[in-house]
Length: 238
Image (cartoon, rainbow, N blue to C red; front, side, top):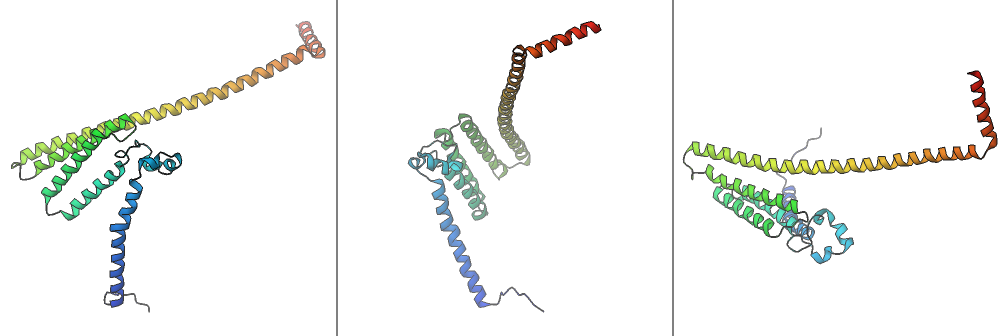
């Protein structure tokens, strides 16, 4: 029989795992961030060329081609990384977690309010609204610490926090529904115009065939005499 052991007592395998762990740690902590920086920090001059812009359109397609605007994706990733680090590295320091959330949200609110990175004005307004709402919601986390002594006050603060989240979701859902309705309207107009175009071609073909038939009847005496004879025959039968 073949037995598979984990090799925990094998010195060679333990050394191999250690070396592999250091290599992966090096790749994660150095190579991957450098690749992300290269992807997210392209210069505006590079994106001015149509060929380069088409290559990076998935990242910078809806952003203004300015230095601070195109750095939006970088700050977006850094915000998530800061949140993850605060969860795992400061799990025993809740005040540090709260202050990091405050500072990051404040920075992103100032960023959206001054830079306005998106080309679409409505999108800039929605993002600024979201940042303000998230900042207010984060302030309510202070109400669930020892700063508020009574459970009743924390309960009331929790309901206010819930209503802020509901308002945040409601506004974003309305924007999504409005965009969806606009896209449906564009599809309807496109289909209607295409149907009208096809229907116009069919009508033109019918009119052309009728005109050709009339022209053939007018210029062919035999067809005209046959039609007259058929009409006289019908009259005689009546």
